[in-house]
Length: 187
Ligand code: ZN
Image (cartoon, rainbow, N blue to C red):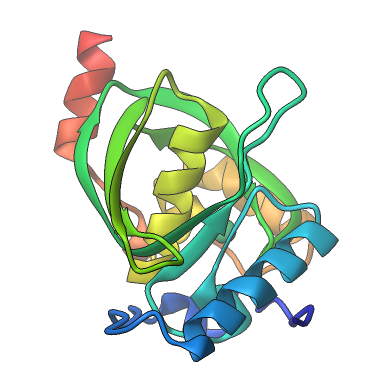
């Protein structure tokens, strides 16, 4: 159990794809505990292993709100198997201290993953909820994708990043998702 250092935007590890977990070993359960300890200390909603410098496909989320208490969740080897709808909302990231910007996300996602006991589960998160957005955000970290890659406006995002002394948006990494764009037109 330990609070770990959270890597900041600009560090190479955040852009590297993470490896599958073959067994939920003691090493992985300790990693999960460190992720929770670090996330709660920093008041985050989610935290992915690469953010503490470990490129394994693991993330944790606690998307509890005052209105809706939820249990802390662990996702190992997650796959997003269904996505629909579109929403624009402000997002931040513990690797981008204090910087928030508007990003485009799917409203509804279904994720398949393995839990801390090595048991597979499927979960649906809907209506652009904090959970639905957190799942997409944390999943991206495992691919080396960051929330600013989904920004609505690159120049607005750059202004915010500059204000908090972070490197500018990586223009080559901005994601053009035709399926999501089509959902915006349908909505
Ligand atoms: Zn993040």
